[in-house]
Image 1 (tube, rainbow, N blue to C red):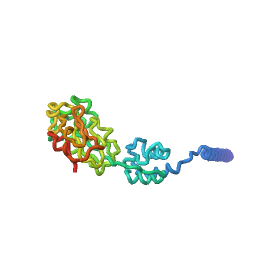
Image 2: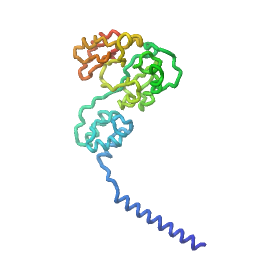
Image 3: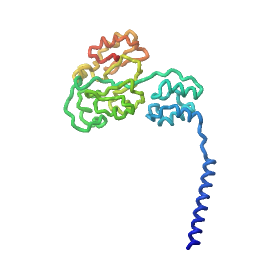
Image 4: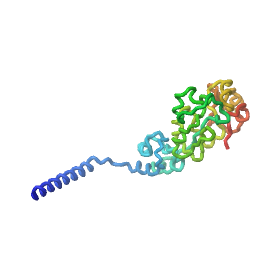
Length: 265
């Protein structure tokens, strides 16, 4: 009995020793050499893993930067300071980094937007695409106000106030998650320093747009005709601003009869 136990113990020990040696040799033989630059870049990134760079988290971006497949300023969360550190690691120039922020193209809150019916179902923006009219608001292009963007934001930069989402531009890191989850396509990334914005997303013709919301763009074109920089155009009944041309003079804000174009402080 004792002899059997000793033999079993010896065999177990030998097997364990063999497996350990085998794994050690295999680990050495098949070891994947890490790129010091990739590790340094990963260490410089903020670690939010938000995916705003277009890669699968910070490790994906670090790998792409180290291989020269992504720019050193590819992290929207880190901004200029992180870009400078990574550029130093890679031995290149950081280049110009334009800070961006999310913007909700809608003013249709509970006071300005008209409604077709009372909705008491699931409070989820994506779910409302399956209900009549795409939601209770008369404007089929406006913010639904149920906060899918709020849930998606990892930086607490979006809040729903009076039935509409607003972005805290100082807290926003421009990761783009809110842009991706908005079923109405209402949210866009704009330059942080831009003051003039078209706060409407409606493609309806003027009479229909006015019945739906008090501050809807009616596509009248006064903004475009009066912009001295040629920065405003009207397509599909909706004004848009070319931020590369916009000087922030505010002429379009003054000329807009429905106050669909706003100036932010």
